[in-house]
Image (cartoon, rainbow, N blue to C red):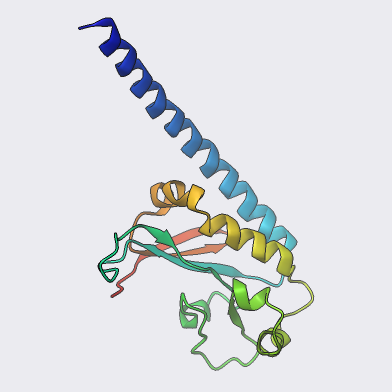
Length: 167
């Protein structure tokens, strides 16, 4: 094997190790940030999002993506009635489920939607959490942590991951 090939192989091995180290550190930090997020937001019981690679993208390349998270105050029993796209299908009128752009938005429609949200929700940290989850730099980490074609639900007790069927 030539010296040049050895240098190239070493470079590739270093890249693989750096990627593993980055993912391990990012996963650890993600868990810490999630805990801190829930500590700062006692009015939020869960955050839910989908992440998947589309099967069809109108001729464009299908690429893995994490979608906008939904924040909710639904109890554990009511959580099954909260969709990953922000709809609550239960009967408890005190439950709300809002996508981050609605929760942090400023239009009149957004203000009406946020009316149920209590004062113990920090909308700024919701926006930052959403930005982190949806960041293109975090896509590999999110894929490694939770997999593809899934719904992820984060609560104070950890993460629940279920298969997600999409078109």
